[in-house]
Image (cartoon, rainbow, N blue to C red; front, side):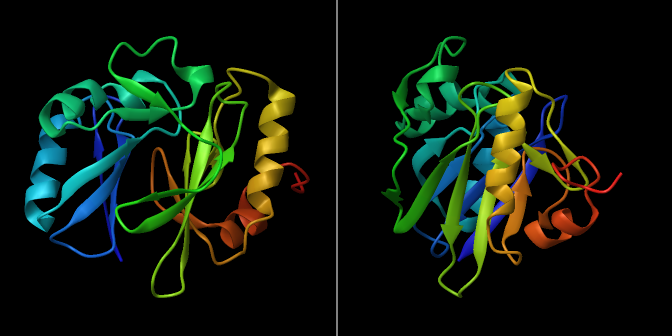
Length: 194
């Protein structure tokens, strides 16, 4: 499986490309502000064509480049309806069941708290690995701010902690981590020893 990512825009938000192989269709997750040109370069480098644009939540640093990506590649953004109010581009509601796109099965985990419509995407690689794209809910060593409900955010974090420990976390900002590393060392998680 091919996983490529880059940080873009003033807030250095991570945009990810996921594909079974280079030279075919891919998923683009969180095409945010400033992502248009680095996205075009990454697609060209890996000879990929977007089959879906997915958003972990509706903040501009995660969806600000989606309308341009839709114009360029003819694929609307899939976004949770609870976060669609501030998004002006073409979009489709994100289903809460698994999606099958670009030869990948993508699970959708509702994670309200950072925003009402925050979600994570889970993907199993063909090599037996597991990924979760957490947006701004969980970072390496930190968590997102509750811009919605703090109680919802805590429940969402507990949901993420039920994932297998070797699941690789691809967050909305900063470096990758694993669920086990965050269970062991993230002081901001529910139940962490402070």
